[in-house]
Image 1 (cartoon, helix red, strand yellow):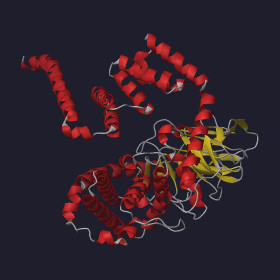
Image 2 (cartoon, rainbow, N blue to C red; image 1 turned 60 degrees about the vertical axis):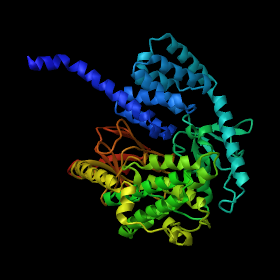
Image 3 (tube, rainbow, N blue to C red; image 1 turned 90 degrees about the horizontal axis):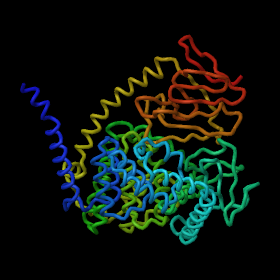
Image 4 (cartoon, helix red, strand yellow; image 1 turned 90 degrees about the vertical axis):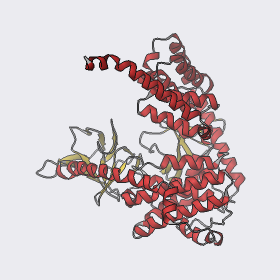
Length: 563
């Protein structure tokens, strides 16, 4: 009887707990301390709840965001629409989707019509009107896209011409920049592209698939080096940061050749503890600058250097790889934002620090955040830290050479750690180490004990590009790096072919093992081989003519070889 009573009253009790939880949550967000929440932190909080499938709390955070801020970011509007639909608030969902269609001319009908988050809107009259408007937007998309790209490239050129080489002793603008869209159409202001069509000042043409990889990077095209930018990153909200970033690589690459590979030692849990603590100190330093508290900014900068020194000394033999990557991507990140049209660079630095602090991707993404942060901090303190682009930069060496920083009061190690969440980070990384040890066992079985498919490629082929999610990699001892989300693009018929991961792409569940020099690729054994198409559980490979699959050992492993 007692048990039955508890079961009977449980829904009522549960509802009270939910109401109390939501009430407490709202109080927290609307408290005086929460007033410092900005658009980015609130949006991130809402998406965290979305990922946890707590759509009620996610909707409440979006409510607070829209009530306190004038939101103009299409991504936020779309994500909020999904949350409201899932939370059974269709009017709010359709309100923001309609704004997207009418104000921002949203045109991705394929994604909109298949997004399961919006399923409960499909029977509403307003949904049919929305679909009609999005379809209309799609018909005008090509002309609008050309106009948008032309405008953003001209804005980029104007910004760089106004800098006129003051930042790096040379104008970063180059005519060899093109934009690539999902239809394999390229757009450029450069009139030298053969067989291109002119529309106002923009030239465009469709190119064969796999000519260029769909990633923001420098690539060979028409026998020249070009800065390639993806169409989805050419937007007014980007404020020209991405094209400037890639143009800097073009400018920088003409003066020094740096390999920007993954820094393997940063997958070590000790290195992650020090690096993440350095991130926290840099955040605190920038927040102090925002408050015009120069004294505390110096203290937190000193803290950041303490963590950096510990890391660099402990991994002294390997740290040159980190310095190279910071020189390559860190300086590009700093330059991209510094010369962009972004008004609040400190806010952007905090966004980068928050966004790049993914423990599965710190081994490469860290440089984008540290380069921007240290560059802006050094500028704040009026340090003449930028010289030529023909050497490897060390932020630690720059700091040590500044006399004013030598007068910063020395703090006790314990105080440095506590004010930068060192012990919290340490605990998180110790737990993650246990998880990573089990992941390593999974990959040992997958790639070392089970049959596999391998292929060796010519690393001198500079037209073979691979694009991967830097937040989903795993260092597998000395065997190489495991990439859970990666694809290739090459039109070179001499290469073995192209590949891409498919389906669920997450560390510990799938992946492709690639040696550090990118010379050998190892795939889990495929489930099907049909002619030139190889299909694995989470990947596909399309072979070029003249390449075949053969058995390589008694265990049943296979190898892609040239006939």
